[in-house]
Length: 104
Image (tube, rainbow, N blue to C red; front, side, top):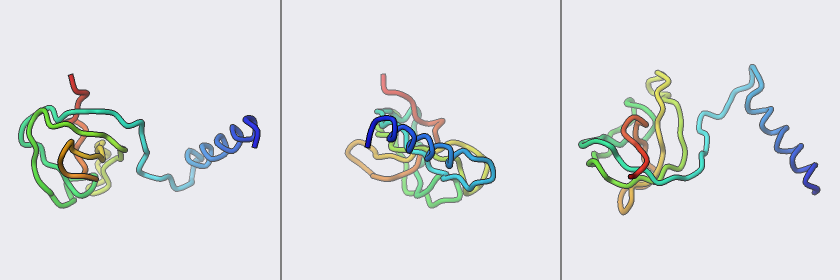
């Protein structure tokens, strides 16, 4: 496949994702980045929203590798949640984006 053909295939795929009236995938994969929890006693959950089971809490400074992000679906309030792994801890968990910052 040539570069031009590959670019056309990617463009066609992107057009499908943003075409009006077409159901869109809710979870979008983002470039992985290293982040930290920015306050104490932050809940982490089994899914992107407060309607999902609370799995535990973490403290300020806990390292977090962000794998993807998604708008809340339970409840569908549009808040942004990050899916990721805690450094040396829980994997594949969800944390509200307001509680995650770039590590300094």
